[in-house]
Each structure stands twice: as structure tokens, then as C-alpha cells.
Length: 413
Image (cartoon, rainbow, N blue to C red; front, side):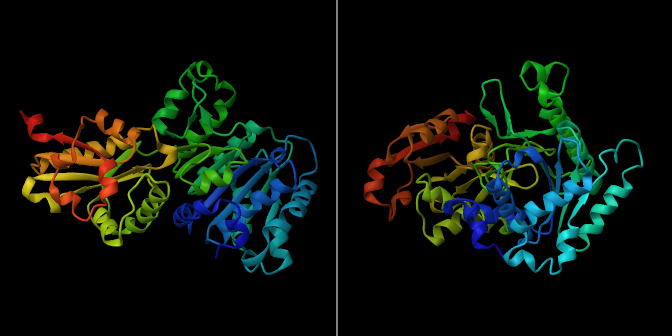
């Protein structure tokens, strides 16, 4: 159960999004690699602990590797970290998962930074982590006197050997920015490979972070489901919102588009509700939304990340042999990644295969209209699409709506 403090980690409008990602994480293991230096104040401990409580209350297993570049006694460092973190984490519903003092204290353990220095030498460290997880879904491994680069590599080895669902690398620089300094929200393994070619990272100004990209790629190739790189301040947004804050790395094909299935409907309804709140999608009745769902398409980044939706509605327009491309909406963090174009391309292919004469779309947004025009649509009047479209339609909205049409029969000739 997600407690009130967990809800406070994000704006109220983001909570539906948070639940969408929690559904993905349920029954999985997430591993976080965080330099101790990122915890600059009590507020940063509480912010991170709120995320941990949310995940633990969601039946998600959490492993945290905290590294410190300074020299010190590993046992003492683990003790200090326990004093700072335990009070923030073991609250409310989470406390019942660790009913005894020994279980709560035992979640924190020093690890040998040289555990992966030689083949076959990591068994003790991995076994120690699992022994902690046997007694509760939370383990914090402490790496003393370990440089940040080495700690990231260590985390990659642990993530790879344990085949975790997601590796989250927390760095002060946050996600990856391109040469134009704009945030790159997503990179697949092929893009990573290109970035790691000789001189490429140096040319893009990312040479100092090469170890991070190498670790991310190695984790993906070893079977880790996804890697996120972000700052500690942006961690909740990166994990739980459509906008994100850092960069998501996956191995799978960049973007796939296919028809929605019934198991997708609940999350797509949440996405439609967000688009309606933003004013980007028309407010629809339950029956109208159901029509979108059963005629819908979803674009997926990697294996789990819904990136956009749309629908091809044809039944009201069979007499005209026409179809409406409706409900096109892409998630914030994937805007500019070509997701909308891929959705439209899939709908166009299916429309041609169904021998439709034309497609049309309606929008209130000028930038959306410009997008459709780039896909080959042209602006037309309301009388240039089936009359059934306007049955029960808000007259005031009809006066303002932008109508676009793409004639498929002309394409064929």
C-alpha cells in the first residue's frame, strides 16, 4: 500500500503515472547505485527513503549500493549509513516487512570493493546480498574508498549477475545531453554502441562519462531489463512520471507499434485521462474511450515503456470508406523521438490494407495540425469528412476544430 508520504513525493497529477510504473515494478528488483556525496542533507535522505518506501510497499525488491570515495572503516561507514537511512525507510507499512531490530539492522552491510577484480571472486558479495534479501526486500551494500567510476562498474556487475529488472545509476550530471545540450530521454543499445565508438564520446563532450555508458551497455547485454541515469533530485520523476528527468537505456528495438490488447487498456485509459487534463485530447465518454481502446494502437519503447497511443476508427464511416485517426497522444519524455510518426505510419499501412479511401483527423492544436501536415495530411473543411463525425459534436468546438484529410486513393494513382 502506498502511504501518504509516498504520494507527497510527486505532484498529485503525477500519481496515476506513478501507479502505472509501480505496476511494472511489482514483483521485480531494482538496483540503485548512488555516491554517498549525493546525500547532501537530511532532506535528500528523506526524499530517497520516500521512493524506497513506495517501492517496498509495492512488493518491489530494492538493492542500494552506496559508495564513498573517502577512506574509512567499511563497518563504521555501514553503521553510519544505517543510522541516517533506517529512520527514514522503516516507517508505516514498510516496518511490518522488517518486524525485528535485527532484520532492520541487517539490511546494511559492507561489501568488498575488489569482489569483481578477478573471475569467480564475486560469489561472497552476491551471496551476502541475497542472504540479506532472504529476510526482507531491502539491502544496502556499502563500498568504502571506492571511486565513482569503479562504483558504477561494481553496480553493473551486481546488476548483471543478479539479472535485476532495472539498474538506476545516480550521478550529479543527471541524464545524457546531446551536443545541443538538450536532454536525450532514450537511447537503445545500438545508440550506446555508436556513442562508445572511438572518439564519439569525446566529440560530444561526454568523454568523462564513458564509464557510465560502458556500464549501461554491459548491463543491457547481460540481460538487465533497463538502465536509467539521472540525478538524485530527479529520481522520483525519472522512475514514476511520463516526463522523466534523465535518460532511459534499453536493449530492445527503439520503438514498436502494435494493436492494443485488453491488458493494455487500464494504463492507456490513464494516459488518455492525462491528455484530457492537459487539454490535448478531447474529453470523451466511457463509451467513446472504449471505442478508442478496441481500435487502438500503442507505441512501446523497449519492453515495457508505453510511449504513445492512437486509434483508427472506421465503423461510423463505412459508407464513405473512410477512417478517423483519433486520440493521438505521446508521452512527454518521448516527444521528439519520432513516436507520433511511427504510430501514424502503422495506421496508414493498416488503412491501405483495408482499402480505405481516405483518413481524417481533428485537432484543436496548431502544432498538432502541423504534425499531421508533415505526415501528408491537408487542411479541409468540416464538410469534407463524413457527416457522422459531427453527430452529437459540440457546436462551439466544431467551429474551432482543425480538420485534416489524407486521400489514400490518390496515393495509389
